[in-house]
Image (cartoon, rainbow, N blue to C red; front, side):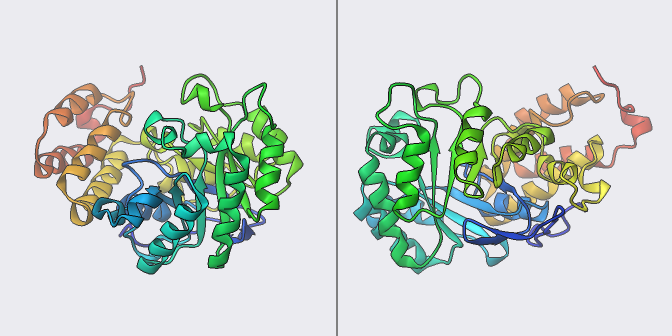
Length: 349
């Protein structure tokens, strides 16, 4: 199979790599973003096996760790072969952030500690966390200082400052760097935009030009060329986020465009190959995180895969109706074993 045991990471390195970025040795600049409800261990291992240079946990509540929340702790679980892996925390105070990080690191080791200052959703911002921190640069900077005591690289993820703010995006990032931040991701939307409109690569590039080698790009990466564009603007790394749910092979295809020695088999778009990829991912999720998550991911990715191929609409409809992993597995096995002469050769709309 394509990933052959998703626990085997592949470090596809473009020319000039591997190198150290943000204090972490990485094979390449294409990294898996933190995605709520998505980037649990099996998903992280899967994308490391496809070549992602670094992966993230889901966004983890520092207060949830402090109050010993079982579900919060479960977000930390994983395997050493996922690494390098960054732990992303969110919270409203430097004290909570430090206490949460201490608990997390007593459970497992990570390669970087990252504070989310970018999430724009009300359930996070109303608690003073996420993008709300961009209104409180002193507290945001204090978080960077508080996390330095753990001896790991300290990162942040921020958004573009809206017009009329007391600080520009560059000035806000400078405050974080002065407080000890080693790397900052900049998402090219303002907090008010949430996930609407288009991420401004120009704004991200402007920050990257001011802090060479210390800024990562984030926002609207759906094709390999999007990653190359961010890198051409001075970003040291780029996050693959919702794009990996539309294209399971987005990471290796981006790496191949960047000149990494990625085998053609990692970039194929055949429906049989897509079915095998989804089968392997689903099996790993089923065996590690359980049936409900395996079905959720498989159904979500079915909606994006197989587009333009004969039988694809029926496959997606049938997939939406299954209630057991065994049913989904049979559906995907039938697609994977289907000869192109039987199922219809590629017929683009």
